[in-house]
Length: 230
Image (cartoon, rainbow, N blue to C red; front, side, top):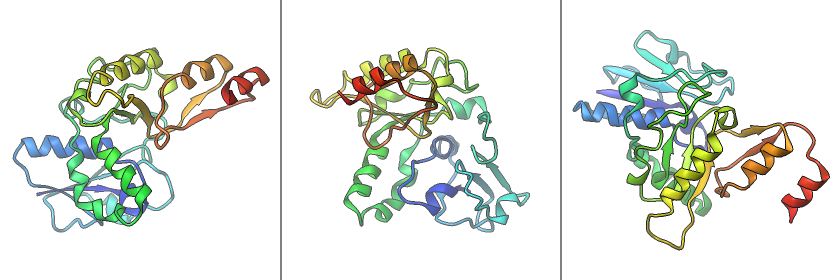
């Protein structure tokens, strides 16, 4: 039995689902393994335990570092994404692994809406190496129910051709029903930009109100600020 542990999701609410957890769930289920997302880190119950942690909050359970545990995520590799195996990276994410925790989000209307959006969104990673686009990054996006594309890259703006690829994917999602809902972009980590030109490029992409953060590192010109406000 495979035990998966999303250390961020277990400790905070609301927080974005973990893409690697969802991919590993699909991967092991296809191998006819019993897979469970743990509410707390319980190493003894499982033949294999996999921990993912993206947020470096200083809260590290000692059991994460036991020999039986495989761990990874941005908290352990902040500068560059450490990929799963090629087969696992090409596996469609399984958001249903989080369903058993839906009640955790049901006590607050806005939290419940966020949970449902994450369940229906197309979760993917634009790049594996952090600089070039993975050709198959949007292979499974049309299989999802919603029209939100959520990227899990550490810094999307550093990826060459990212904005154009995202716009193409949003156009594909716009062909899905219902027609009156526009496809939008969400990100797990802030998009870091450093110039007015970058700002103009990214602010024109249709963005999810709940899952989009654009971080401008510098001073925005008066003209760009006026355009943004307008």
